[in-house]
Image (cartoon, rainbow, N blue to C red; front, top):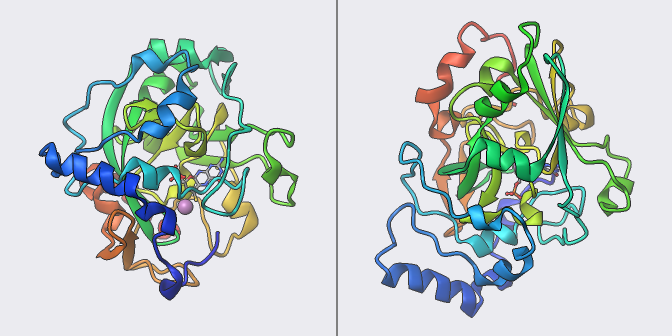
Length: 315
Ligand SMILES: Nc1nc2c(c(=O)[nH]1)N[C@H]1C(S)=C(S)[C@@H](COP(=O)(O)O)O[C@H]1N2
Ligand SMILES: [Mo]
């Protein structure tokens, strides 16, 4: 991940286009200026017309997960992404990603291995919307209306054995579909959670955002959202979820173990070796905001880390 040089950060010119201004103005006029308002960017609806799950969106919002800040305009979210399978540039093109047919394999320490079709999975799990903060380790943040289902529900469906202590998430591996995977990086992208983290209510599987199926750049058709952790935990375009008894080695850990660890909990007091985590640039307005411990979710997750003080919890 590239260091964001503070002076160099700016909203790309494209984000100050009339459409973006229009979207903001409409939200304002509709009295939706308060936290939670968002207006879908019309440009994407067309591209997703063929998605067989499209009719299931928007889903009802779960009122337990709302925000103290405005949702990031969808257009910003779609034009500022980390998805190294496509590019290390944030304005990336993931149109080569084929999201149907798509299956997710549930394997490892489970009663019975299963491979489930994404559309069947979405129907079985049901959908809800949650507003979550999103904090990248690079010290920028957004606020995103995800649609999906609790990871816990998927785990109940997968029926892990009691010997499973970690969940490992794996992204697709296909050099033809993802030019970035022709690089030397340790593909496929892998992430992991402890079982206790994975069954926490906050751990969420997203299949949509902004009231629609996920866009390709967002990691369609299925990704993780763990808002108390740095964004690199939230693996995109998942094809395999494995229940294991050893801590999985993650993509970023394999690349830079001195800079990126397993836990990756957000903590303003623990700097990245190369930059401070005390503040973040909120992409809605480009302004710096103080970063909060566990990204503001301490009440829900702090208890998961009792007695683990010796672990590198915050990288
Ligand atoms: N497969 C995959 N998942 C990934 C990444 C990636 O490069 N590949 N980047 C991560 C990082 S660093 C962040 S901040 C988020 C970005 O999600 P967004 O582009 O939807 O904001 O995805 C995470 N998941
Ligand atoms: Mo990130």
